[in-house]
Image 1: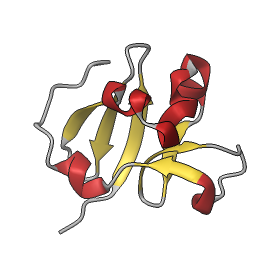
Image 2 (image 1 turned 120 degrees about the vertical axis):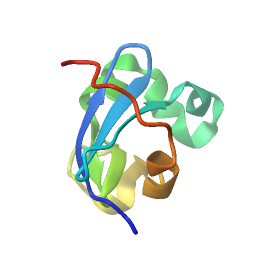
Image 3 (image 1 turned 90 degrees about the horizontal axis):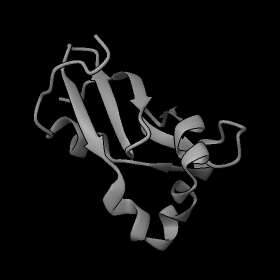
Length: 91
């Protein structure tokens, strides 16, 4: 079963808190992506923080700023859901 992601909150340390509809919260560490050519735009911290959104039903970065789902960097929602549940960082 796939749960919808309802919110994503990026932080300066290249982590993103991902909130699922069933109440699960995970912390995705995006730092390992920074060494991969395709994820190179994420190295710009402003881009990382300001383009982080939900596209294609998952955590994504809107590369063009037009919400074009074919031109985004996204993470498989199954990968995210398999992460350990964490407490809300901003509560």
